Image (tube, rainbow, N blue to C red; front, side, top):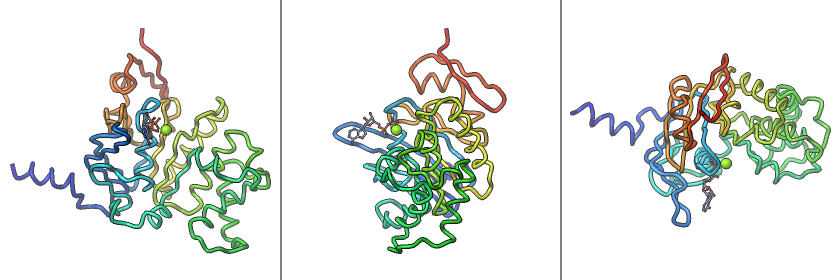
Amino acid sequence: MAAVTSRTQADSVPDNLDDLVLHMADVGVRRGGTDLLQGVNWRVELDERWVILGSNGAGKTTLLRLAGAELHPTTGTVHVLGERLGRVNVFELRTRVGFATAATGNRLPQDEKVLDVVVSAGYAVLGRGREEYDRLDTGRAADLLKAMGIAGLADRTFGTLSEGERKRTLIARALMTDPELLLLDEPAAGLDLGGREDLVARLTDLALDPDAPATVLVTHHVEEIPPGFTHLLLLSHGGVVAQGLIDEVLTGENLSAAFGQSLELERSGDRFFARRSH
Ligand SMILES: Nc1ncnc2c1ncn2[C@@H]1O[C@H](COP(=O)(O)OP(=O)(O)O)[C@@H](O)[C@H]1O
Ligand SMILES: [Mg+2]
C-alpha cells in the first residue's frame, strides 16, 4: 500500500523536476463549454524526442501551446522546464523554448531577409533594442540555415520562399536562441513529397544530435515521423489514447483508436506507413 501511495504522489508532484522538460498532471483545457484537452498526464525528459499524433481537431496544437507556455491549463498542473505555469513569468520562460509554427510565418514581415528572420528570433527574445546584430549572432543564424540546407537563401526575402523553404527557415529561427525545448507544429504540412522527405531527413539529424534540445513534433501522418524520434503520444478528442516508446505504442490498433477507423500500419525499415484496412 505504501508503495502505491508514494507513486501516486510522485505522479502529481514530480520529485525530479530538474530532469523533466515537461510535466503535466491531470491537465484539462476548456473553452466555451468544450474540453479541448482532458485528463492529460505526460512527462518529457531531457534526451527524449516526442511525436504527438492525432487527427485534425484532436487538441495537438493546444497541447503544444501548453508546452510552450502560451496557454494556461483550466485544470491540473503544467511544469515547463521545471517551472509551474501560473507561478512563473511566462515571458521569461518562453525565451527558453523554440516554437516553430505556421502562425509565426504568417506574422513575420514578408519583405524581411531570410537571415534576418532567423537572427531576429534572438533579437525579439532578448529585447536588447540593438540596431545592428552581433557578428556572432549572424554567424549562428548562417550556420543554422546551412544545417537546414538553405544557406543559399540567406539574402532572399521571406515572402519569396517556397512552403518547404519557409518551414525550414522557421525551424532555424526556433533554434536560434539555443532553446532547451523545441516545439514543431506540423512542420511537414503542405510540403510536396521531395520537401517532406528532405525535412524528415533533417529532423532525423536533429533528433540524433545529442546536443539538440528535447523536441516535440506534432503531425497527423505516420509517414512524417522522423527516424530518431523516441516517443509517441496519440491524441484523440482531447484525450491521450496511448503514449510511450514509439516501437511499443505505434500499432495498427492504437492508430485505429486514435483516428476512429480501422487502420493498418506498415513498417518499412525505420519509417511508417498507414492505410485503411479492408
Ligand atoms: N478558443 C477556442 N474556443 C473553442 N474551441 C477551440 C478554441 N481553440 C481551439 N478550439 C477547438 O479545439 C479543438 C482542438 O484544437 P487544436 O488543438 O488546434 O487541434 P489540432 O491541432 O489537433 O488540430 C478544435 O476542434 C478547435 O476547433
Ligand atoms: Mg494544430
